[in-house]
Length: 384
Image 1: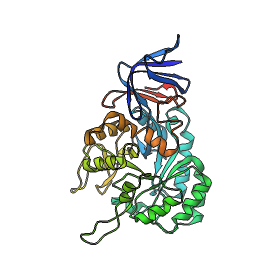
Image 2: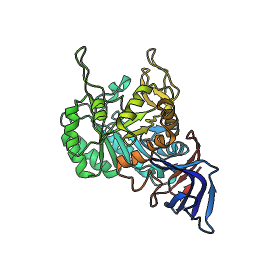
Image 3: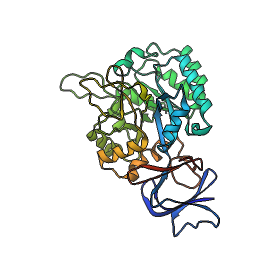
Image 4: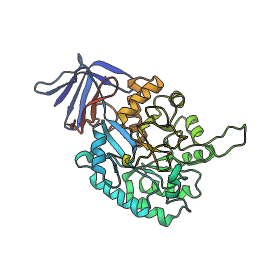
């Protein structure tokens, strides 16, 4: 048995100021006020020094880190992210990769899961394959813009199987319903997200009625409406996601508020409420970073493609939490919720990760009041 004492426990909607948390093996056993939770005799004690104890951070959308792509070399990326408290990550592949590359990349990531830092891998987040073209130079690299062909997607879905947690799709793509139905057949618990789309709210609602939609990929970047007449406000996936109370919205929250402006961050958080916002990193291979185009603002934690346009970030989730607090005024408790309980619930994994509830996995971080990570516990083992 191990006990974390002299700590403040970060719950979903509150804080236990003088808290104790007990865990044994890889499971949380008990947590609560020090006056109510007795530390067993002989238990190994970790003195938090007044720091906060929170669930491990969950990054559902991350392409790589430490100069590596997940689909090529996942373990160095895992080690980098784990040091920042990210105890569950969903490696993300983008449709600049063809069928053979996605299948090979999935196997590379699957082989790394479960060993060393690879234990943080919780499945795949497929940003595609069926979306509209992305921004900047990505347009010329997209591999999946032709007709949606069962002869292509069946081997993809079969090959990746239930290792995929989230498929990101464009509801406006012709034939998307067939792909979604087949992916659900192979993995009934898989989630679907709107991404890189100008779909109408009606098209989004149609996909949701299939029981297939619960999330929007990086809100503000992948949901602009189709062109509207002058003086007429457009309606697209962003508007659908804001107005539908069931949909989670991902946010990339950089230090300067460039990817999503601070006013937009505040609007999303206030509109969706604290239980439907998810912070992501969208961290990519930072070794390919380029200077921004003349008309594009610069932030050191963002990534720019070879045309100088935004193409991901160099964020970690602890930094995203700090940035969200700075830009919105939301407190530590709720900003940490955006990287713990909310993504866990969206994935259907709240019984396992994302909370400090007894029975949950002992993935824990000790942080200060600015979310700087002091200690990381993964599956009950201290790794930092």
